[in-house]
Image: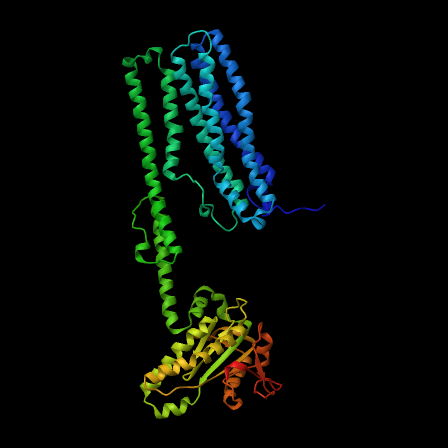
Length: 525
């Protein structure tokens, strides 16, 4: 039997490793059960509070209207709810993640907004009950008790508030458990545009309406005698109920502030940290004695630790390559050494020893600083690491991070850029009254041990292997061969996009068993 993939591996996601159809069924049942709860309250309220106020004929008309409304509206509302839920399955089964990113984004947005979408269907279904039933009662020939419209409106509104509030929260929980794992593998649902997540303060209001306002209103109407509809006798219970609802809503608002403020501050600070801002003002200066106090304290300590780590990286970066600094701090497992194929470059200023004997020390230092200031960025631009400065030159490693970059291409490109920058560098030297320079560049490619080399208390990030001194010896042949840059046959073989080259006769090089064929760039001399 052939099994067709449904986009993400939904069978391996979510609670119980549920399939798509089961997720639909559970989501649909959750929406139905919450509505049945509200309907049960509505039926009980109508039987105990509205039915006694109706004549026998009005009661029969009322019951008929309720049945007809339920037959007409409920199946339609259930069908629309099912179609909304099923649309999530269609996006997965059509492989929209790979074939139609726009469709997949809409499905993600629909998964986040699922509570609102179901609410938009159930809400009108509840509220349409009021005009439908009132129309049925008012068209009956018998006069209607004036208390019935008020009680009917209260019955539907309170039942709807209870049912819809629970519907929203239940669908939200079901969506988070069943649908978010399907649509969000490597991203947060909060990052999807066009969604309407319910904020914490508004959740408090929703809760207050369902848990405070609706029960108080219901109890007042159930317990109040018929004389309550006179303004004088109704004043006190109405005042008590109004105050109860007001205090409940105020408590919900304050709870939203108590919970919402630290979360908003944490979110804003986290976004700043994510953007790379680790300044002191990123820490949260909010004092709390509850769980948020521990959370804020931990966040501030994390920011301080990241700031210290950043400072260490900056300090290390002044003395070692920035890439090496990050490796030493973030990948301590590489300190013991790792065998990798790399490309090594040696660069040397020709005639440096003679110049040191004839120039003042400060001129030599100025020349070296200017030379390194121009050349080092060119190495780093090609993902190279300056391993060490050798006075009149340096050693650079390409491919030390093991990221799969074309290290041979990078090394040759860096060498070309260095030679191309020489005229500009020499003009700067001449502007300072210094003699121009010439350089030699040698490159070799091969396996080497890359890592922290040295004593336990003092080491440096370097490469060790036979191919390293061979690169230095190739650089030493540049003057003899009459080419400013030479690279070995192993480097040539590792190039993914070989440039136009001049092939030189094989030469014996100490460290290689066989004579080595060297190559020079056509455009480099």
